[in-house]
Amino acid sequence: MKTTVNKSLFWVLIFISIASCNKEETKISKVSVTYIGAGGFLVTNETHKVMIDGVISTGGAAGFITPSWETTEKIRNCEAPFDNIDLYLVGHTHGDHFNARMMDECMTMNAAARLICPPEAVGLLTAVTDNSFSAYQSRVITPDPGTFSCFDTLINDINIRITRFPEFPNHPYGVFTFNILIDDIKLTHLMGDLLNPGDYVTFNFNPDDNDVLLATGGYLDEPEFLKDYLNYRIAIVNHIYRYQYSGATYQEAARELRNEGYKVYVADSSISVYRFRKTGEEIILE
Image 1 (cartoon, rainbow, N blue to C red):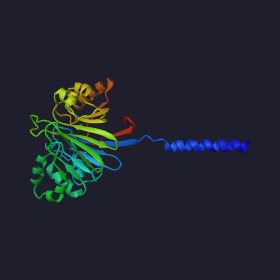
Image 2: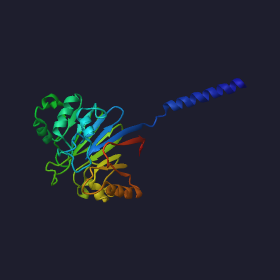
Image 3: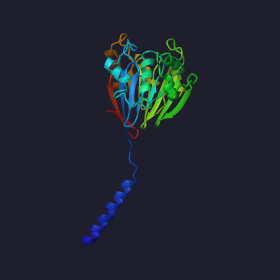
Image 4: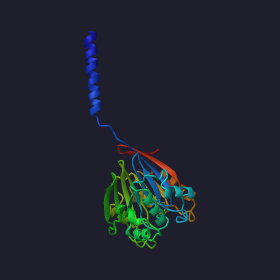
């Protein structure tokens, strides 16, 4: 009798083991987003690093939240955590989004990095005194899609979609918006002036299943956009105007949205780190 029970228990355990092996495990994705200043971010997972509008100087981002001199020197010299960047993304060439001399140094020092930037950025890079553009020119991608048209590419297993926004009074060439898929987490980096509400519905630059929205402070000035027109599970509002409204004003606006169920937060200090964890379809800010 004892032998029979032991044999039965053995086969039950074998069945459970096989079932566990065949069951597909739910993937857990982790991405960290470090706010640099102005509209700049460093997006990382265990194997990749993407810098968006983050190669900026303290002076170039005057009037906005700015990185410290120590941080800009780390960026310039490709020191941790700004080392081994896979991809630099530049949305437009204003000084609060792009510094040509620093970018020339970064691309020269980081020999594996790729750069995606508007065509007009090349003129600024080649105008840098004693520049090294010819050494990294083959690693520079300059998409030139029409207004609200897209350019898709895959770099080091990172899916990127670039959409050109229309011209604005302060942006005569328009601006690039970036959709990034990294480790199953979908991010949208949204700069420039606010569009007509219908444009957010008509054009596919902010997909329905977007996880993380990195949006300029103007969207907190007009919070109905964050309520009705933009897709996200968690939003980090940034590029707030230091001398127009106080950080506390933006924080209060974000708290009001959170009270209504919208997960909106404000990046109001340089080198703030946001850690996202996605399990299945659920994403949380740790």
